[in-house]
Image (cartoon, rainbow, N blue to C red):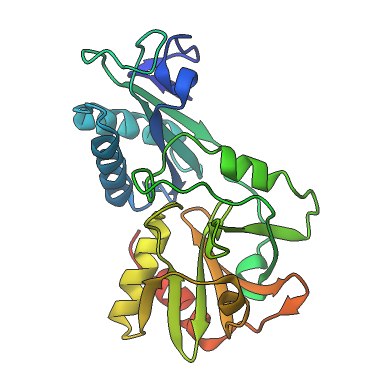
Length: 272
């Protein structure tokens, strides 16, 4: 199912700035057991992203109504709902028409099929060669410009490798191509500071909240690659996969430790 500005359609104007310039944002929301997971957090991030990009988005009520419509169409079938907000159609040139109306796109997709054991027995990840661009204005938000992730993800086709680890230009760990990353050292969780690059994931936010509730120390800071690789435990997360423990990076192996397991268990108890 695809809705564009509330209408059943699959055609976008060639002048739409999302197509022309990647001028917009998106959210990917799992629909499971008849419910959109962490919906309020996704909408809040979307609205904040529009504010930071100065997209005049005042259509939250219409968006919610359309999400209800799409959810009803899925019924008891699990899936993924993707929301895209672009600045709208504004013709050629970087300067946007101030009167342009944002474009809302909602589409449904089958849930991706990942091996069930990833969350129990862990995954192997690799180090990407391509490094992330740095821009403090765009850091944290889920904007449409995903070329860094696309280039990095196309570095490998080995299905034994579940994810690629991405660095910034100072050789600090930032994120995976599709996930946020966490390391555990001496019983404390550390996750990269996303002040110049990376996406502040919804699941990342939930994990930070859970750690605080469980009185597990969690810090957001710069993490050099050498320090990250020397971790006791490593795990990755996003809204779709939840949490996957990491058991191998570039031939270095890790155990699935007690902190990772504790966060996984706590997440299972959260009302999504």
